[in-house]
Every structure is written in C-alpha cells, then in structure tokens.
Length: 278
Length: 325
Image (cartoon, rainbow over all chains, first blue to last red; front, side, top):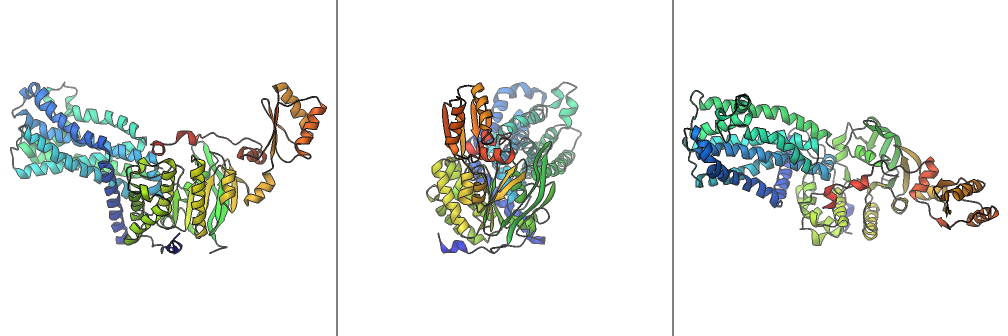
C-alpha cells in the first residue's frame, strides 16, 4: 500500500452559480465521450445505424422506386433522400431508448445518482452522443445518395439547412425515446416498445411516398405528423417546392414548431423519469 | 476522528406500494469503524443503503452522513461517499481504466489526480493486466473489484458496500475481504450489508441484524454469537410420525422445530447431543442421523424472530444481464 493513500483529497464544495453550469457541461461531456466509446465498441449498433439507411436508399431507389415515382413531378431519388434522412433519425432515436434502458438495467444510473455529478449529465450525454452519431450517419447516407443519383435543386445552403433540420429533429426524437427507455428499463423491451411508435411515424408519412396516394382516412394523420412535416421541410430546402401553394418557409416553420413542441413535452418527462428511475 | 458518529439513522421508513421495505430502522456508525447490516434478502438492507447514498428519498425518519442530511444536503453527502451496489455497476463497454476515469471525471476531483488515482486503484485491486480490456471480458470477481475501485476513486471518507461478496467464489471472497480490511485500516468508515454471519464476523466491528425493515438485534459480532451463535442439533427421523414424537420428547430439553422428518434443536441444550440421545433412547426413538452444526443465518433468524428468514424477493435469482455478460 502506498503512503499517499492515507492522505485524503480535500473534499470540494458543492457547486454553485456558474460552477454549476460549468460542472453540468463538463459532466455532460464526460458522459458524451463515454457513450461514443461505447458506440464504437458495439459493432451491431454501428451496423444497424449505418447499413440500415443505406439498404433503404438502395431498396427504394431501385426496387420500389419505379412503382411510386409515377405520381411525382421530380425524379424519385430526389424526393426519396430527404425522406430517408428523416426516417433514419427516427430509427436512430430508438438507440437513445436502448442506451438508457441498458444503463438503468446494469445499475449505472444508480451509481451516477450516488455521485456528485450534475443531474442533467446522463440525459444530456446520451442525447448529444446520439446527435453525434446521427451527424456521421447523415454524411454517410448523403454520399450514398449522391452516388445513386440524388441532386440538390436549390443550393448548398438549402442542403445544409435541411441537414441541420434533420439533426435537430433527431435530437428532439431522442427525448421522446428517452422516455420510452426509462419507462421500460430493459434494452430488449426498449427496442420492442419503440417499434410500434416508430413504424406509423415513418411509414404513414410522406417520407417515401406522396400522402395523396394513401387512403382518405389515413391522409390527415400522414399529412400532419412530425415526420411528414419535417420531410416536406427538408425536401423544400433541398430540392425546392414539390407541392405548389405552400412556401418553403411555411414548411420549415411547421417543422420547427413540431420539434420544439416535442422537446418541450418530452424533455421534462424524461428528466422526471430519470430522477425517479432508480 | 474516532468516537465521532459518521452515520446516523433514525426511525427511517420506506414503502414501495404495498411493501413496507423499512418500518423504522435505527442505528449509528462510528467514524472509522466497520458496521455490518446483516439480514436475509428482502429485509431492507439495500433500501437502507440506497437512502443513505441519496439514491432514494425516505418516506419518514432521518439519516445523516458526516453531519449532512441525506435529503436536504444530498449534494454534500454525495461528495463524501462511495457506493458499490449489489450488482457490479460498471460500464461493460468501457475498459477498467476508462470506467475509473469516468467516475473520477464526474466526481469533481482535481483533473490532474484522476489518471494517477485510476492507475493506483487498478494496481491495488490487481486489475493492471486487464486495465485496457472492456469490462465485459472480466470475470465476476474482477468486475466486483472494479466496482469497488470505482467507489473509491474520489477517496470518499465513507464507503457503502451492498453485499460485496454475494455470488463470488471462495477465493475471490477471501481476496476481497483482505482488500476491504486494508481500506478500513486507512480510516475509511464502512457500512456493508451481508447475508453471511461469517462475513460480518470477519469484517465488522458492530453488527445490526435487520428483518422486515427494522433492527431486531445489534452489538459486536462476538456479543451476537454469545447470544445467538450456539450450535444446532439436527435430527433426521425415519418418518413424520417419528419426527413428531421426537419433537414432543425433546421439548423437555429446549424448543425443538419440526420440519417434515427433520427435528431441529437450536440454542444450548444441557448435556448436548448425549442428552438428546438419552431422551430419545428412553422412548425407543432412533434417529437416522444426528448432526451438531454451527448456526446458519436461518438459525439466528429463527431464534431472533421465531420465523424463518423470508426469501420473498429472490434478488440473487434475477441478476441483471450486466452482471452475467
């Protein structure tokens, strides 16, 4: 035993004021880094989050594309890619649920609760790590998109603004699925519980096909739900207006309202669940 | 610091729905001492630890760690405690070293001390060779050692260990006991829970036996042993009728317990096993086996409470995936 072990560290004071904010940021960063290391060491998650959207691009571009493109006035691949970006972040948000459920089950959350760390760090670290993952996946999938013929009709700023909107939407969804993960508390169940939430959002939407082709009873939902609104906004930003009558700004506003509403509703729920989770 | 009180627990209560986990528990732990909470699964040990480590709020009563209330001064308590739970709470994807550094980084430690402290603990818990492997590749004993090391990163003056050796093999258990003893020699106040009388005996200076959410006996291990730790005489009879008759006969000597064809005589019997044999012989009863054994926790419970140690919450049977991967 080394002699130094007998000398106790001086016990720091409780954080106050700016120290609290600084502490919350540094704790959040530590958790962010931890989650990204974990992601790098989970090949199945990496494969799920990168291969899955690439397969969807190829599937819709080359298999279903011919059938669904007849109702559109733009090349299907140009219509498709903004939809793929939105679909991808919805599926990706499930990993927020899985990650938090795994931490809850393994007792990590219990340990974090007993540490003098910022109470916001676990959720902030998880959602920002998932945002970081989405950032890289979005780049990868855009490259694949360009390779299979996707072209921007507006300009590079429109494209970048669309990307930013996709990432913000993904971040908002992370909070939605954080509540799922904390509610079920088991990674496998989190995955199973997420799917029924994701599937109607992704498939009963304008992500892959025009809403006008759907049965009348489904159209009001499909037209107004957040994935459709966001997909339309991203589409307007990247390839211009495909439906006359609604301006790009209107779509973007609607999308921003949705994502702010999602965060405003689900972040407080997730925070409350987190405090009670252990 | 000797003589001061590090942990005060007064009339602490907690219920989960219909289950009363703590029904008013009281105890005090002196600074620099080792205190053992002894009890079966479901007795409320883990709940008590979770309240003391600020993880759960109590429903009633009061608990203080180093003079700070665990509810109103929770942030100050968290700066002074280390906790290792029943199931090693380490990130299976991080290496041993990364796990310790993560805990250091979020424990408000001076940044330049985090790395040396992690290395020091890895060495001390004999994990240096495995330090750069993800914790999912560790054995159960290694994971438990890493978990305890994580609790020690910020060098907390008060340490909580919830069933530190449950599920470990004998060798790992002995190793861990030796490491815990070293810690204590440095002046750390330790509160540990255990289901094993032997563990409490080996490590703790004082023990509280808890059952159904409150303390039913307390003292030093040797006091408890003198009081309760007498050997048990166990007879196995040919059938239940014989067992019933034997129980009747032996009530002259003590308080026999009937359990199918088994008759148990806890507590000291004047004349011991010979007296038992003489009584049985006189009525023509012939036990198939007669055993004199050291008391188990079950026997202690039987003596203290008159009922068996309940195992209503089979915590051991439902170890989370994190513990088994």
